[in-house]
Length: 132
Image (cartoon, rainbow, N blue to C red):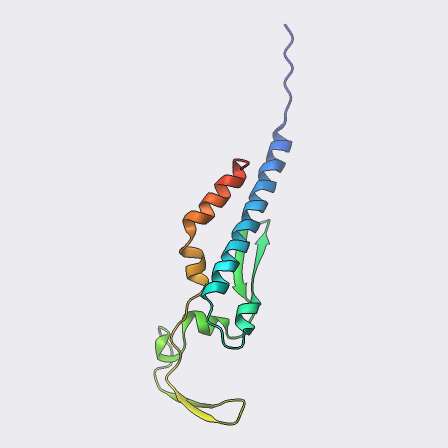
């Protein structure tokens, strides 16, 4: 009796890695969609800056914004941010008008876009890994 064993582990591993990347891309697109739906809109700059990036080496996807004020909207400022400035301050806007502020309340859009939909992301990942 002759038995031949074929090692397909490299192909299997490559297939699994491809499935993981597809799942991460789908999760990133879905997370970006949710973040954009929850993002407060004034000029549209913050909304339009929300994107995602898959990091294959980390097997991770990051959803965020490169807008300079994205963190301030997400986390709040001044007395509304834990450990933030407690004293009010004044600032001048682009039109030359002066304003007194105590800060800005947080308007989270990234964290709830991810944490609020964990089951959906899990389902996407399982679906890709099971070939569905």
